[in-house]
Amino acid sequence: MSIRDLSREDVKEKALKAIEEGKTEEQAEVMQEWMELVAEEVAEKVAKEQATINNDTVILTNRGAKQLTSEEIKYFEKVAEAMKQKNVKQALTDLDVVMPTTTINRVFEDLAEAHPLLKKIKVTNVTGITEVIKRTGDVEAAWWGTLCEEIKKELEAGFKKESAILYKLSAFLPICKAYLTLGPAWLERYIRTILTESMSKGLVKAIVTGTGVNQPYGMDRDLEAAVVPGQPVPRKKAIKVKDFEPATLGEIIAKLTNNGKRVVTKVDLIVNPMDYWTKVFVITTVKNALGQYIANQFPIPVDIVQEPSVAVGEAVIGIAEKYDLSVGMGQKIEYSDEFKFLDDERVYLSKMYANGKAVDNCSFYLLDISEINSPS
Image (cartoon, rainbow, N blue to C red; front, side):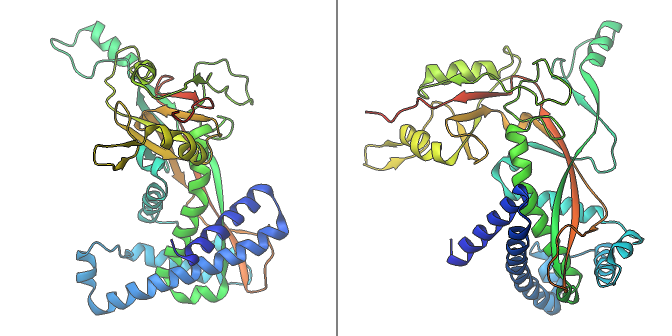
């Protein structure tokens, strides 16, 4: 990772932390710095792509590069024009176009690439959808014989209709007016970059340990616990483990089979980076006969995800694909007057909506790994 990359990551973390903590003056300073870094990076990428487009669009397309559709070009041209107006808030409100579905889908694709955990879970775009039908997991997928009344009832009980109520996750979009002249390709890439970096952190934290109050249910939450309206859903009781030996893992993975109703051939272990390097890495790295070290050696296949939102001394083990995340996207970009920069800089607001939880209460378990020690 280059010095520039480190600086960029540091600025991004400072900006997100300032927003989270509500430090107004620091927000303005670091968001401006972040905006300039992202804008410069995006401008370089778009300039290179545009040069290639001018040379040969067909070749670029065949190589897999994504081109803006005519609808996307029209949308971002109109957004840029609205952002140039003196009464930008009214201009955006009166805009007669909405963010194209293709752009929304691309934001979701970017999010999936932004974090390894988002690649593993099941993500469904429910923009514009009010209800979803989910399988309970307690019914056979197929059967032999005629469709009798008893089987009909069993099938009906195996599916449930759930409201696609989504909770708001907002991201600020600082945009300098001078950048609006760089064209729709630049604006589209810039907005996607900011949205991805702003929202991926908040999404992943909610997926792992969301309280279920105005946000998704985290993997560590007990879906069968008594819930007081408006209060966080209780966390699961942590299972204390002191090693990852076959007997220890076998007992935990047996719970993941849902009383023998599903086959489990591999699991995901989500752990704080500090614990990974001081505990997990140490006890799962072995030296082979050639004197070479081989990391992450478990009795069964385990995919490790390092995630800072997991508390030190804890870990979540489970089947990542058994977490359902429904996401939607606000189709309008709004003007925000919550932050004041220089005269030629404005801040906009884009909203993502999301909700999620595990398909059942035995797809994930909370572990207490505080007593795992290095081998003597």
